[in-house]
Image 1 (cartoon, rainbow, N blue to C red):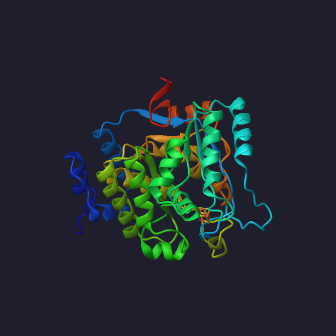
Image 2: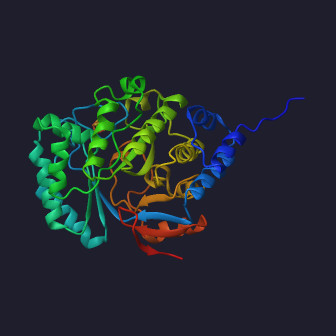
Image 3: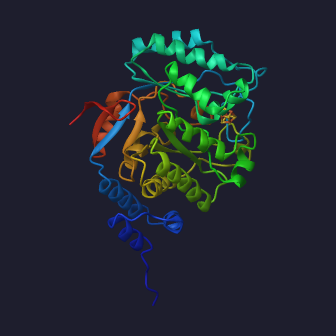
Length: 367
Ligand code: SF4
């Protein structure tokens, strides 16, 4: 008679002993079909590292300065060329005007802005965006531009990454979002984002930012051509940099959305909810040095994001006024989540909703 072997048990023992998980553990976790066991283990790891019942969110405004991009990532449904219909590049003045009018409607504390890598702008364009936003909204946290965009600015300006980041920081940039990481493995990058900078450049940009006191976020875009091994490799590379600098505030797993991309024509579908939960749990378990893991409701929908709070996540991102990038690729969620709805979902999941600022300082709590 076959004896059932609980593949999670040796990993559970490591988690309970506070031991670091390795590559093979990561693989075993991803290969496990015991979804509820994974969730329980991830929640155990989160609590053992000091996590409580709080589930965080931030009130934020999403902006995109341009959708013109030279890179042509195959998973991207957002980017266009300058000549295509619908191409836009907003001036710094238009961006400020838009942000000010939104501020009258919602009390956001953070602006999250990313965009295409347009060859038709200069580095001064980016500097002016930051300067003018900071002058117009000095109490709003500016979380702007991925490491890929920072790298793009070095090619536009001829300046090293450190000078680009220092210049932006000195006019008001506070933190960097985590986009552009995709999956670090060369094989994957060649297939889905051959025009993008190397993973070493993405990691080095974050390393330099951390050295300048600019905290950042990190991501993984999963659910396309990557293997389980490549997911684990990606997470361990992020963990290694975090060991070195401690500069990542949160990890956000991003599920690939195929609509309006070349992959839709090949019949690819959205990731299954079970895979989203598994990736969240494994991320929490492997990234033992990153405090916060976000369940990005824009991508998975608020009901599943609430479930994810039992799979290692402790943050549901935010009110996210006007998200465009995932919606261009078929995300069917609302583009805005009202606070009372968000609070209701979090409470129904048995967790305490806490509105935070970008640095996870508590602003309001719903007991
Ligand atoms: S993902 Fe970013 S870099 Fe890639 S094509 Fe889209 S906008 Fe450009």
